Image (cartoon, rainbow, N blue to C red):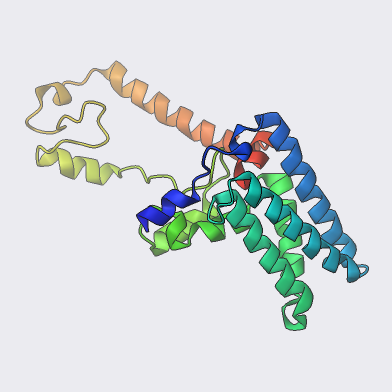
Length: 226
């Protein structure tokens, strides 16, 4: 799937060359119209037919803007969403899909969390990690962040670092890659200041993660759907 993954990356195209702020407002406007039509559809089902047509046009527009690459993530996401809307609108048994996508777009506006982007990420050609229960859980529980969604690498556990160090192997978590264990005099005599700096760095990382959850901006909105 490695070759297919390369096709999901947005190439040099009008979409990529568009000014970031302009693309942000364009994306915001298009999804706001989509959401408004979805809400109106709960009063009059005719609006759901309109939202399918509007989303189809939206998909074609973005598909053309990314150089007619259907697998490019922005186009892939919109094509999938249009198919979702069409099924919910024209298949009576699947009408329950409409409130799901309405809530999903609202979650994107309010929290910066895009459920559909995470669902699509699990498709084989959109990820570079093997599918597992842990990957699925992290896909849906990982906080929103800037850039195209991807499961972040999991930090090495403390017990693993100790085991690696005990065998005198290069530790991936060490900036120098040196072994941290009985064969390293410097590791045994690490200054207190260095350990304090490590604690401070971890605390700062936790604070940054919390800030990322609470800080939802238009730039995050743009990156999640772009």
